[in-house]
Image (tube, helix red, strand yellow):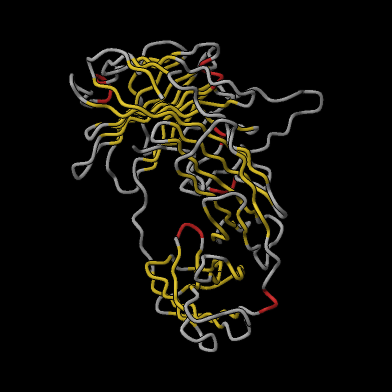
Length: 427
């Protein structure tokens, strides 16, 4: 099942910048939220899209775009809905992305229908480990940066530089994270190298020595009482202040995990600890926590109670039981998926108010998709997102809003239903 968490870093998925700071006039208080909603669709590959919108609880209407943006007025309402159909290509399913929120929570919703095609240059980083006394043959050297992923090389002789080939890497000046990992998957050292000018067929030499080794840290992950995971993974990573340097620093499936702090950590940089834990295939927990130093403790949220959600089995179903209890609940994400259609609804806490059920709107007439048919098996996931921040204002395609103080937790319930076969409960 495709579970669409806040893709930070992960993606989870990086995160986007916080809302622009507004300066109030003296004595004027906080400026009111905007009365217009601006929708942006990212579609660099041109797969195509259609849109619809709703003001308050009014009728859905076609959304007219100028290029990749559209704006509509809320009038006297503070609630709205936006639905974008991303056209399926190459045999892939149509995807419906629906957002129901208030203008105070999110005034500039964004939907990504396609991503830019990866392209870049070939570049070699020669990593000199001759001054690293702990380096051994068989160690693996990782070089990573930004959204470019990572490349590796294997130490044959510690006295000989290790060539690490970066293929299809974006050209330009950027930060790179260089790490050395031993055969037991323990990080010996991690270092950020700033301002590397990546050019076509070029190369750079990076020296990693004993002076770059910092004492290890430890990250603790706390599971809720009574939750018995059948699988769990814990990680610590690093992201530079300009969001151009990214690297893993430790990982494992038992808490606590050791991690290796980065030599060259500077103001604006941040570490992130995150966790994924699943109990069978029906209940999952996620947590992401920023920090600047030390030994963080990450607390995972409570799981959805067994059988707490109900889905009525229609092609555009009603989902009941959206009453996850947490003081920092910010939103729900309910996703439906079959081989032919993905339909996802993001529901803010402010939009739902006291309601505990949601019915997916039938937008076939406005958006032109083919709905689920009788007898189709549909996978469903419901995600409760918790944070002290307004996470709806974070863009999952840009990690700059993820700070050392950011903490996001998610609880996921999964199940399936057959269209036309009546109500089922989950997880």
